Length: 79
Image (cartoon, rainbow, N blue to C red; front, side, top):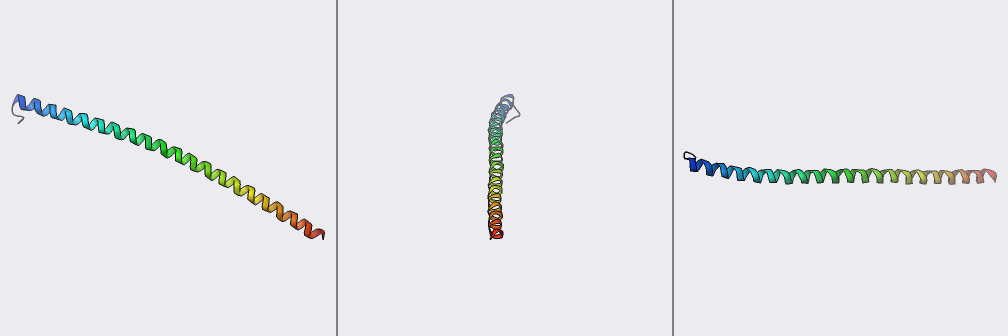
């Protein structure tokens, strides 16, 4: 009962406890969100790196196949 001084003090104490719990939960959620954001950036960087490597591999494969085609065309024209 908040109509009495003792009841009001008890209610304020309870609210203070609840606010402390909320603040701790918000801090924990904020820390988790920060970790997830960091992990997301790391995964995105790795993805970009893998895509770049894949592109370079494809470029090398195309260049090698083109060189083979030119070599075969030269050999065919020489006959």
